Image 1 (cartoon, helix red, strand yellow):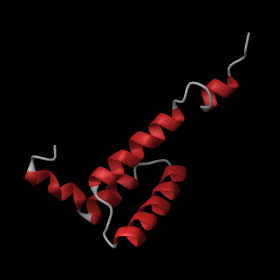
Image 2 (cartoon, helix red, strand yellow):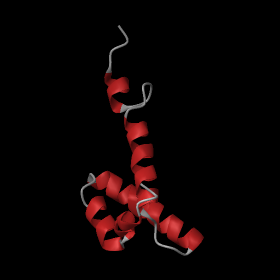
Image 3 (cartoon, one colour):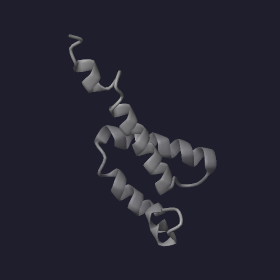
Length: 77
């Protein structure tokens, strides 16, 4: 995707806001913190790539085989 220059529109803040608005509220809050930290550290607005990495990380956390909510709820039987 990085070679397709017309997709750079996904980096526009309005488009990122639209994607963030589709996340569950808890993840929206986490993204706000993540985006703020990135903006303070680099002085730039987070990119679509940053957002994708965030979502992938959060998805990995949610489906962790040991500590996800589903794994913790499973009986050990």
